[in-house]
Length: 336
Length: 294
Image 1 (tube, rainbow over the protein chains, first blue to last red):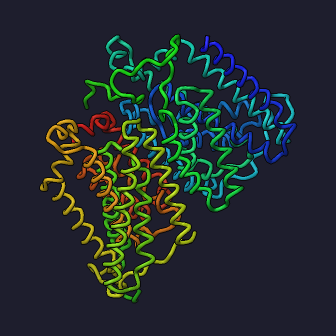
Image 2 (image 1 turned 135 degrees about the vertical axis):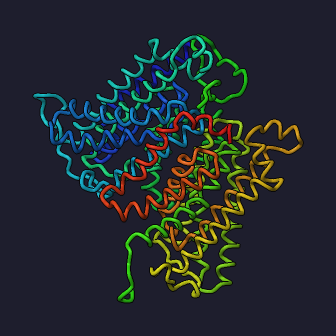
Image 3 (image 1 turned 90 degrees about the vertical axis):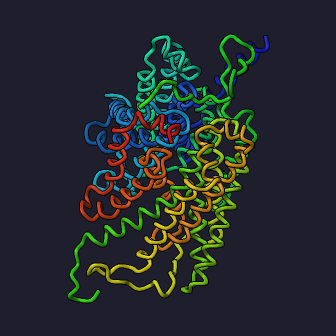
């Protein structure tokens, strides 16, 4: 009964948030609308982080790499080929997926802190390359004046902040919906099973490396699409959008929102980014200090850091048998 | 530069690469220790280096005593900061890697902000001891004396580190904790104390690298991130936990960053990425198990 009430409450809150998001551009100024659009793009990256970290149990700090790949693919290639948003999204998602696919050999057998380390190195190196490849990316100055797009063939160009925001909102809603739908199928079940007991999944004949590779590429595609949305939202892209602090903010948002909850990741990332933007306005110069202390405080205050997801159909989460660590243990029997 | 000196364009970058590589090795060695023993990805490691760098910039005045003082202060400050991170981590050590990453990143953000607040947002100049300020002639090329001395000192530090890890009781306990922390606990040594000690030692290494390397990778608001990235790349390339591998990787990265840039300027941005991709692709499957076999 209590569970039903909680579920009803959550649905109510979710519905209220969606209505507020749709109505937001008519109630706040253009600057805030542009900020909101950018935040939504980051929220979509957080969804890809939650997909890897929470659902599949593969902690990552490197989702900024496909995010950046998608953004630059959309800004550089997309602008030359077409001005249709759907095409940009496709190109950006393909770029993000391609980058993720290239890094699959590096991540497929790594788990836990090794994976964090490799993904962080990949993400940082990707941003370094973006900053130095001046002829294509404009270096650290970035690419300004990215032309406006039209969402679909035959529709008008997105000329105002409000229109760009609504386009971002629709795309994020559709993509999050697709991710949620896919996670309700057998695919989601297999990913969760791999997170909870990889050795058993292997033993029952499932090809876990294929699942890991698949979820990496899928998360890369989602992050790439988010990159395209970022370019649409701010019509500008520079390496500063994909820095180390972005990865860490995303991670904080995902941990706050509940690592295994896709919607929670979106909300958590939005909260963290909003808090960051607000702090930079209120306390210029001191914002990183406050933010850093907030990180430390979050670790101590959160009930269990990365919370364990409740098991479907049970009131309380099952008591973990060995240790309360949701990361994947290194599979036994894997040797070089 | 005096006229008439034969200048082969590749000897100086190659020597620079050695100095750079050894610096990165001393900085990254601490990260290897943290990672190999405590299983902690210390994202505040670059900040510990920056502490050493800022100390050097603030205290060095061109004399030898100031170098000794800066080294002492920098090492002590960075060691204390490493111990602080360890202290903060022990209470959440039972949690997962994500919270550890969050915590150390929070420390890095706050520490970086405090450093910029204390020393200003610009890159401060670093004065090396006057006796080392000039240049010496190496095989017909003029080369900065400080860097030459740095190569020797850093090589000594690397050798010392090897001896400590391989030959002393503390080093043996640390290696034993990597292999089997529970067995070490059964022997009567608290793994928690080893973890604190290793994080403090890692801080000391980063601080020493920061002070001595300040004339090479100088302190500034971007230093912490740059050093963390280089260290990470080197640790990953070196096989995640092997000191020898890390040393070789650091020397290779040093050559890529200096000689590679001199030889192929247009490809320079991608060289580091390409090196990492090649090494990881070749031995990707070995990485997952590397930690156990060290």
